[in-house]
Image (cartoon, rainbow, N blue to C red; front, side, top):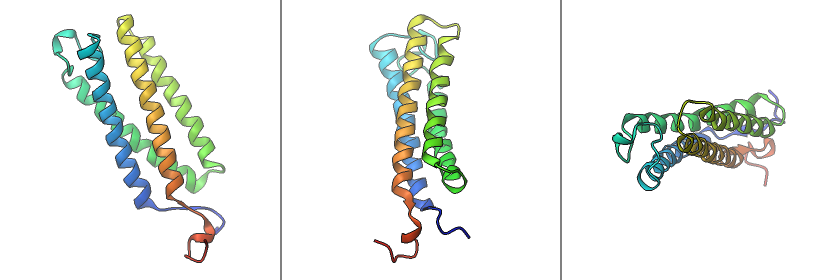
Length: 151
């Protein structure tokens, strides 16, 4: 067994991952409410769907939460097997966020909906990436501390 490799406290990591998923889902809902209710931008559903936008908003929030959980699983995998795991995690998050921002811009939507959807995806990517990275940093135990003898 390689004792020089850092270990992860899985309970702490996944508690943070669950909290990240909740925050991401709430960001999605708040973002849609602001876009639809305050700025009258029909994002995710026609304007007739009201301030919440119907089931599309629920799906968007669920996918945002799932992205938080997927990021947590990815960081756990990277810590276990990759050299410089947080560097790889940062790159994956930046590129995944870039894709999430660009995709709405190429869809057949109004300009306001494209920009709003892209901005929401940017905020979600930044939130998920920073929260999971912070959680991972707090959940990593250095090899010297695994047996409780380290400082």
